[in-house]
Length: 326
Image (cartoon, rainbow, N blue to C red):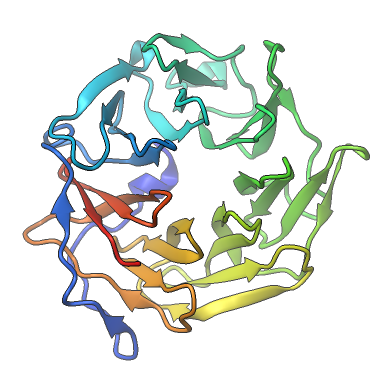
């Protein structure tokens, strides 16, 4: 599994003074337990609000939030660990996996078609043992990170092609995202964000250097958001407005863990920290609000959002919950 999973703190944490608490919010469980005793490491949702999730090896689907049971729709060959999930506009599901046969130094992406057939997408990917982060462009191009490099697969081409290295960095790319204009963005450990210039076949830096970047998301207006690691125990979120060249910090620094993941819908922003806490920023808000934790030993491990802004969260116990806050 990727490092971000292994070092994510799972436990009960209290909010800090100065952060609003959303005590009146009630989480509702989505269906039955997805996979008993296995954390929900990844979540994705399609345009029809079908929800997809994965534990370590298996991939599940449930019909829109009112569904009652999770249906297993696939499993990775050779029980390769799943690093991330993505779904395209046709409801095809993609899973990037780690090759546990370390001497091969490869990873792979598998596709589960809308009809339920699972097959490897293209050839093995070089560059490292794990493929993490998946980004699907409107034109059908698919991008992933293997090791510390970005690879591209074009429809009709069986080969994954490594894109050029980013300048000024130690080639350590942590997050990628694609906007509605097929523009590819990448964030690095060194805190730089780049956009790929297809005509020049090279990366171009956007804005100033930020703290170490862990995750990235783009909203429907092509605004770019990155989650950072300011210190081991804190993180900040920055926004690059569409057409701008300047990063703007969103709210205050969150001192309850580095930022694990970001999800945005209708300009409503949610983040999950490495301490398993979820914070939300309303579209016109200026302060982060911590959402309530779950009862017992349940802790948040993954988040995603539906088109209408419904927040969906997976847990370390295999359960999935939702809440609508807009």
